[in-house]
Length: 487
Image (cartoon, rainbow, N blue to C red; front, side, top):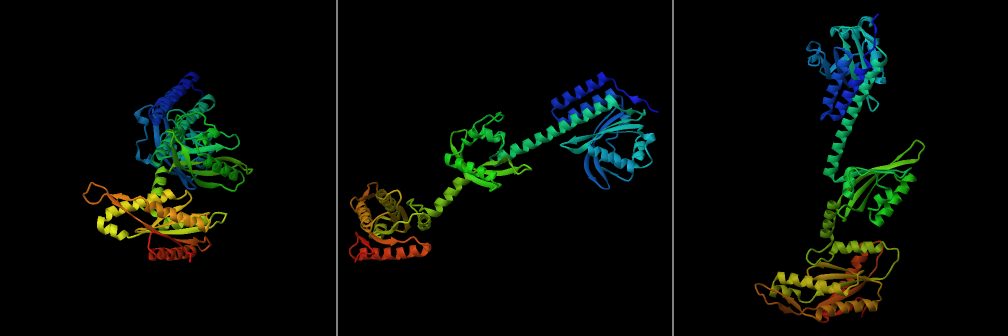
């Protein structure tokens, strides 16, 4: 009968202390594992200490790799042997199957080779001249990551008591190092992703109100990357007040399970004090009893995207020369007006420059363009903030105005006509440095604009009627205002 193994408690404690410090201080965690294995091997007096990493467990066998080894002499080294590189051990006898099951459960296993039943396990032990072995599974996040093993090729050692417990602690130290390494690697990946994607992560505990923000998000908001605690109200205070109300509304909807995932665009005040557009990605998580436990997600800086969208919108809806709306912009403006709950009377004013072709022919198109820009400014000065000015093409402009009587809208047309006619325009033509004084007049046609469900038809009717009135203004001498309803 082999005698129970009772290692020297002091030596064993020193070995664990040395190995623990090595795992913490080593630049690479694997170097710390090497030092721990050496310390435990020397303290225990065994011939070989090893770690197999579990790659895959299937019903037929276990795929493993020999990743760490300490040996008391070169005679006992095995890691360099090709048979231990990504090797599969078949589960073809009950004793080996039981050992594998114990490892998956997190239980240690000891064996004396001479007492092992004939089969795969005993064959493997004898092929390595192992007389006794003890193995302790390395459990990472509850999963069997690998196995820490001690081989004695000279003694039949029955591990128990403090000796076995020391090995269990050693395996737990290694598991902690692996877990920290995985977290560090994931954190680096997350940090890189957040840096490249200009985003941060966040989470709110809805029971306590506690918040967690990634270092990238904290830094972007003006806090240290390791800031200990950011209260919920202070976090939400970085959002524009109107956006803050929307966020609170979404959180309430998450409580009521009306929303579980959503994305909204908000403006956040960042470290520089500026307001920048961000996309807020929210996802809610519920406990088994259906209570909202937490809300988490991403904050993605989309200021550049918003800028591009605004530029695209401006290019699509605004005239590049005068800065007024174009035909499409006018149509969208009318669509927005049509969504208002209170109906009102609207009018369309068509404005056309008299004899504009003569100006282009005499002074050139650059002078004509400058005149169009100045004219748009003058018309805009006459309008109210709620009125809309659009350039339809060439020298033709349109104005929409509401909340006016027929008499008042005619007066508005007269103010536009007078604003253009009363003051001359000064232009620079060709190489001349002396400004040229140009007198300009416009004709204005007015028609009612009915905002109905068929907005395209309503706009087409108003344009046709305003054009008729504009034609009448041209035919009766130009530089005048004519309404469609006038005789």
